[in-house]
Image (tube, rainbow, N blue to C red):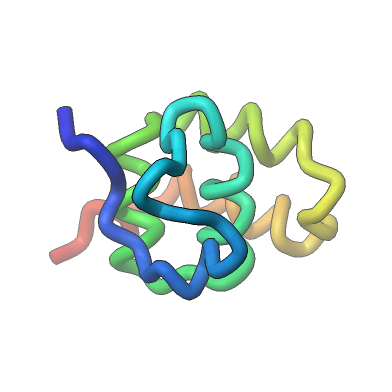
Length: 84
């Protein structure tokens, strides 16, 4: 397993990424990528955290609006994450 997902540091600008706990703070990472991430960053969190953790975060999140949540659920069921 990788040590951390490959996402832009700018998505987590307020954290020290040298000491950031990627496993413990997964909800923060997932929220930011769902809101602001690229398709490659979506693939990274999908592979790093699993679809179950992403869906758990979608249901838990107060930061994501309904549109983001609906899109995330639909996108995770699509084949787009597995496209080349």
